[in-house]
Length: 266
Picture 1 (tube, rainbow, N blue to C red):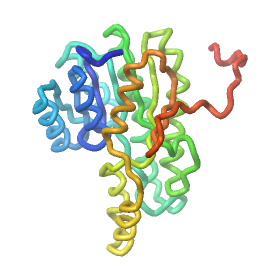
Picture 2: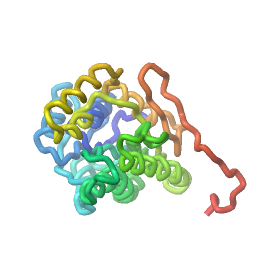
Picture 3: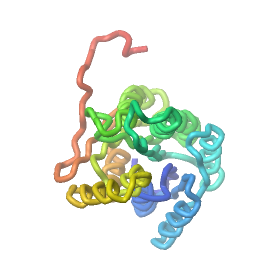
């Protein structure tokens, strides 16, 4: 599906990957709804889109609230007349201390934003995309959703869930003309990678910054380009695309496949 003339919705679009994707979609001719809990960041993304000659509108959205998810979808249809593309992108990491020392409310929030919101956001969007004649849903997973990620087991669990959820929605292509894919980035230079360290003391924070300075960080624009590939290539459905620094993006197959499992036909 080409974005030109379509209506797209991006969560977490007030910064980072979400902002880069919104700008890329608008640059490709889509009208873009910017959804974020950060009003200032969302408004800035709208200004950036409009400054480049694109169309965008902001709707305040807390992705942990089902009513906000329903409202952002309704806003897209009311403002631009339809909905064709959704990027469930909003995400966080779990702040220190690492699980199992992490308090319940800390890791529950990670699961809510990184997994529950993707599921609920998809459920809210599907009827609208069907009304628009079909489209594409892209979920932001992570390389941590494909491998063991010891620094943040909760984040890894949530992102593994996103990958599994995405692959398990392949049936929507036949039933509703909706393709669902996910992008699995490695380390990206976004505000999220430093937010988790904000509660650390000066010495520990300095160590984090020093480590990041030596890491090959990808730009949000690199991930946005991968998202556009998943949107525009009509052959891709139920796929997980890994994006790692210095390598070509690569589709990752499930580790185990039961091609003749009758349960897969339900």
